[in-house]
Amino acid sequence: MTGARPTATPRDDMRLMAAIAEGDQSAFAEVYQRHAALMFAICLRIVRERSDAEEVLSEVFMELWRRAERYEPSRGAPLAYLINLTRSRAIDRLRSKQRDRAVIVDTPQSPDEAYADVAVDAQPDPLGATLDEERRQRVHQALDGLTALQRQAVELSFLQGMSHSQVAAALGEPLGTVKTRIRQGLLHLREALQPLYGGGATP
Image 1 (spheres, rainbow, N blue to C red):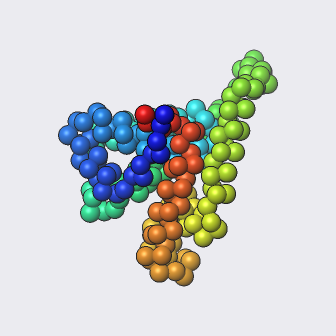
Image 2 (image 1 turned 90 degrees about the vertical axis):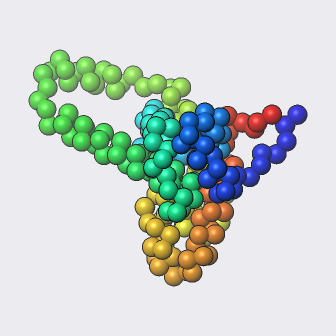
C-alpha cells in the first residue's frame, strides 16, 4: 500500500542540492524522482523527438551530478534552476540538429546515397510513433489541466525564456502574483507527468 507523495518544497530541494554537491547519491536519486517527469516534458516540447528528449534529460542530470556546485540558492529555487538548465540544453540540441540538417541538405549526394536515405525514411517505427504520440498527449493534457493564467505564465517563463519580472511586465500583473501562478502551475505539471517518466510513488 502506498500513500500520497509528499509535496516537495524549495527548502527540501535546497537541502538535496547541497547534499548532491557533496556526492550524496540518494539525494541525487530523490531529485530525479521528484522532477524528471516535468523536465522530460519540457525537453519533449522543445526537441519533439522522444530519443532526443531522453538524451537531453540524461545530459542535464549528468551535469547536475558533476557540477552541482554551480547552483546558487541566492539566484532562485532549485526547480527553477533545473528547468532553466533543461530548457537551455534542449534548445542547444534542437539548434545542433537544425545545423546538422542544413549541412546534409547542402552536401551533394550520389543517387545511391539519396535512395538509401529515402528507403530509411520510408520505414516508420509504429511503436516509437505511438509512444511519442502518447507522451505528447500526456504533456498537452497536463498543460490543459492548468488554469489559463497559470499556463500563460508557465509557457512565457519556461518555453519562451522570460524572467519572472519580464512575465509580470508582459501580463501587467504584480511580480508576486506571477511567481505564485508559475509555482502552482509547475507543481500541478510535476504531479500530472510523474507517470510519464521517472517512476511512480515511493513505498
